[in-house]
Length: 197
Image (cartoon, rainbow, N blue to C red; front, top):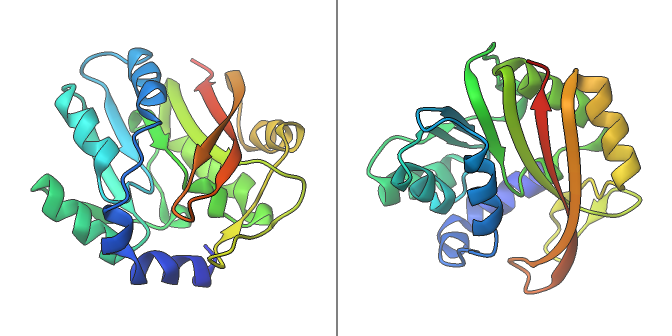
């Protein structure tokens, strides 16, 4: 992951935690509805643990992780349970999880590294597993006003990248907008993929 982007989250962990975004709740609800009640979920980029708390409240078994040790510590304190520090390229699980929730985190992966990361996620999913991720859309990689790196994919580029990473039974991309930490509205792509059973 881009070092400047990681540094932003390390330096702003507490401030970021205070700006919890709740607009994704409907997408989280829809994701959880696709899983069994006893499903095991890996959460990548859990941030301050807001989604983790909701997943736990709904009775699911979730393993929350974040790439920033400082953010993982903030989430650990909030949740009262350990949160692991995990960089995407260190994910080595094989057919372990029924679902992977990666809200607003894979959008920071450099374009040329995204397919290998998606392959690791595909490998970590059990057959038939569900994978959710969201991306800020665009046509070329770049940085925002806070100097965070974004891969800014188009829907077509994203479909090709997912296809190169593994065999998916289905892949659905929806569009929308969210307001981010920089208080700017951004067009988004919301991806739900199911691994071949």
